Length: 273
Image (cartoon, rainbow, N blue to C red; front, side, top):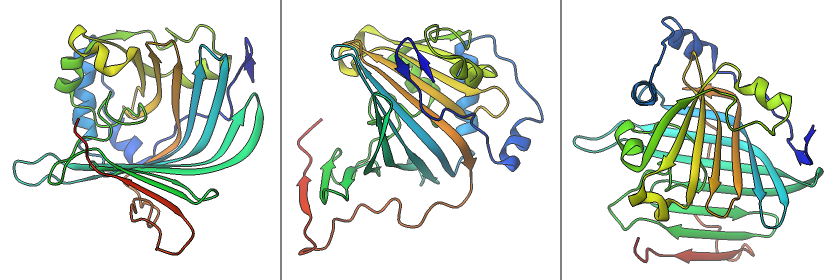
């Protein structure tokens, strides 16, 4: 489907696992402020132990006039917190297909982040890169807005969001005026949050704005959009979302390939924030 020369590939509606959707929709909530929605999202996020979904990652480069879409799967896991400690959160994104100018081609790559190490694997090129983003004994939240490599809105703490961003509750179709009808169908039954960086965080974040869409009944994430200071746009669309189900074995493995296996292995240790 095309809109003003833009291509959206395989956009679908995010469907939660039936047990989660039923449990979360017994008492549908109404929100009259961004703060109220953020608080409810934080509460709902505590109940998520695992989450898996199909993912579409669209990047539009303003200067080059280029658009790329990657398709794959997202996996998220949240372990219970220890005494006085936040929960351990990690995620993996496994891409298998790339669309450029509407042309489809295989492009296998995986990104795994466990709060300390961000690992990139490209099996076709036999490339493995591990970057240590926090020193030994520390972790950072891999999905905290402005810290992780993708804008994936799962389990955000309301206080963290509001400390970094001004938040507005806006019409779900706002900000999508140039998108095709399928995108408007996707967000028709969602809450939309529009976030703009506070002055103290604007330079660090690199964002002009962040927009997040959540299912009105389940409060599960459906779509995220960012515009950076260069005018580039990124979309993350989650489809077929399942909560608290099994996760594919080994998807969070960050161990490097065995020596002698023919891989180019690069390991970059922590160099400071």
